[in-house]
Image (cartoon, rainbow, N blue to C red; front, side, top):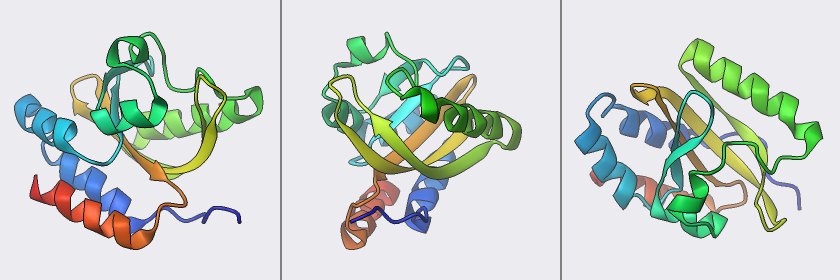
Amino acid sequence: MPAPTEVPSLLRQAAEAISATRGHALQLRDVFDRSQIPMVLVDNDRRYQEVNPAARLLARMSLQESRRHQIGDYAPARDRPALLRAWSDLMERGSVSGRYYLTFQDGAAMWIFYAAVANALPGQHLVVFVPADWPGEELEEIHGVVLAV
């Protein structure tokens, strides 16, 4: 069954709620570290700076190992133009969301929905994502936890 194509509004709302801590490193870190939704902070070169526990578990990669990579390292060549367009849109508009075929170092892959906010901290950009086939009611449950943090 193909994954849905529309980004859940709750994912965008979660990214916006988290970005409300923009510029406040301690508050952002608290939400980031405690969230059950996978999140990453990447620098201007798309290099992973911080990867929350949910994202590390999903990727099966330690924080130290994650920091040696950047968004798109495992993307097939055919997907790189879309990745670069989304990155350009993020830098231009300050936020972007969409659907992406995420690939992992072990060859596993899945469709995800993502929402990204530029400069959640100076020079660090927040990306929040969920598997595209995640049940909506569970996403609502997790979204409530994110907003309560």
